[in-house]
Length: 306
Image (tube, rainbow, N blue to C red; front, side, top):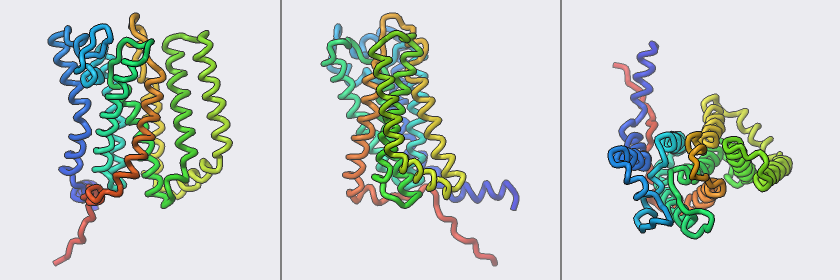
């Protein structure tokens, strides 16, 4: 069989229209951010009007501030991270036939974090503004972790709670990475509270890895039976999280003299994504609507020879 024929056979088993429909829904958020960035490029004064600023507060800013960025580098980093996390999440959801569930959960978490992020800025005495998509990125990263566990459950035929220790370790590793990246970018090498926080998180992470080592061993044993594609899917999530942490604080934003980035808001986003994702996942899976999924990867019917 020629390569061209194999490609044709593969394409015939994929329902691209269905996948593109879900992809279009997932891309609504970066599309809104792109529209806002374009409008701001035409009228720069919109930037200060649309971002949440306690010195010039309007109620609509609660719903617009996450889609506005400080500059183009900030916009590009946040939207790229969103695309990596959200599209990869949709791919995982497609592989386990949970597309509807992922699309609905991602939008629910976006709404939750829109409100949470705004309340964080409003009620935090040390914060006078809130702007950018990175908080939502953090929440979707938490949801991505949950869907990775569902993928493991689907692939290994084990219950999700088998890997709860892995989730805890992942949250600690993400937290340590976020704090370390912040210290490196802002050159806060002598900031005692930050260094103490990083040391504490790393110490707890090492203890957790030792305590839940049997889960890591079990994951390794499970992955040994995976196909290469399943192994690459699991490795890809590590690379996506590494990119996400590194680009959480764009260089130009870090050097923006009048702004400071909130580490706690990003870590809170990851935790909110995990908790809300898990709770709604358990609840929504009981609803019949989410069980009537159409497969994106179709079974190819055998061709009868005449």
